[in-house]
Image: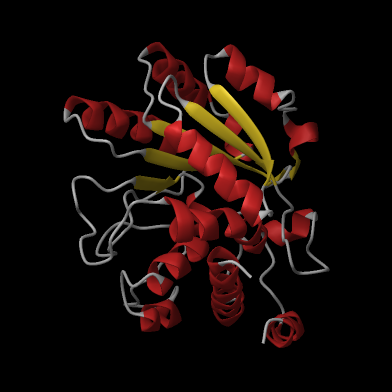
Length: 267
């Protein structure tokens, strides 16, 4: 078992417990992006818990801010803040909120929640880093549902025009958004061809295969000719049988029985 797979097991345990305890929503997205986040934090990102504001660090923006528990768990497990903070999730005066929040949380680059802003801010960060002549990268994790937003495609065009070779977009393509399947709401396909037509280098990969994810991320970081997008084919609610690939996973928290089953499976 790889180090990122070991981290993924802990993230799954943390996320399911957090959502069950708080009776909070967005289980599906938290689980669909979990393997991506595990590989990024364990294998790819140039970050240091003791220097969370290092000017040479890679910047990860979780544009799909409602999947915050997954990133919060990754940061806690990598030592950015005490794991005890996770137990305060959604509590009054707690440290951890439902959506990703940069206020007082080491390692979080941007508060997000309203979809369609992460890539635009990331483009601004990438331009700033180029002016500073650093080798840091900006990685933006997007949901496929937010591909509906015009601001995202404005940023896609802008990054290509300015040849931002220090930016990597990652699309968690779980094919379900808040009110239905993406194919029914606004059909995104052929998504890869669309990004390519806008001047981006495109990779498509199984978003739950750690080996393939690591290989693709490493290739993307070495590619310095144009902006890169990695489209990850994922399953909404991955790991919870009654939630996998179902709309209900967007809103329903894990039940006590589901939580118990998962904890037993990953002992």
